[in-house]
Image (cartoon, rainbow, N blue to C red):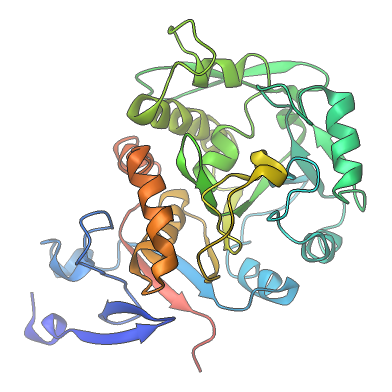
Length: 339
């Protein structure tokens, strides 16, 4: 490697220490849980450009969301679905409705998409789900509960647990998918990023989610830790493969409780400071960058989030996506706020 590329520059971004070469490439090498620093991963210089691009803004607003989306929307066209977690009734941490309303209004004909839940709660049946959507203010555009009218099996290419996954049938009605994710903790997944949003969120409530959570265990929640992560990632792969290049990913690192929005008003208090918004056309890179930022911040409030991720073996989401060829753990971070 040429000497001029070996020079490292240490800088601070949001209180996080980054090692930078060229565009903001985070290393955060002090933690064993983050991506291998590109500068030290041993690959030839000729391969330095073969990394994913992840965009970042601190602008936690509707305008920030629109700005970052403009960088990753190159293949979003036709009939557009927006997958987000609309939450249980009165959940305190879900994405602000005003942001999503303004964002969706700029995508004519787009719809929010969801599926019913595997657990008995506010979104277990379609009728309950629609009432919860009303309570939570998701009334400004059509919301397609994709398993309302049945299911469809989509192939899981290269999966070791599944050859196919059961999805809400209406997934077939869309040409493109925007995965708009509230990044936070999760009681089973450790963290909920883009992979969780579609891995669980696109699977239908009765068959697909049971495949992921139950498997051959015979118990409703019988699959946990690494096997659960692998099941969830294989489900996500079915959706990623289905849309091909017509899919993009946005993670909003805001109100990051260790609890998922599926816990509603019972969610644990938020202890971490907000960070910003990340976006990429690479699902692995955007989730890896999100985890890197959680681990890299000097905010002591990240302690509980790290404990939640590690105790559930949530990092297996990242390594298994890499094994399945779903994306790149090496990325360059482009700071959209940098003048």
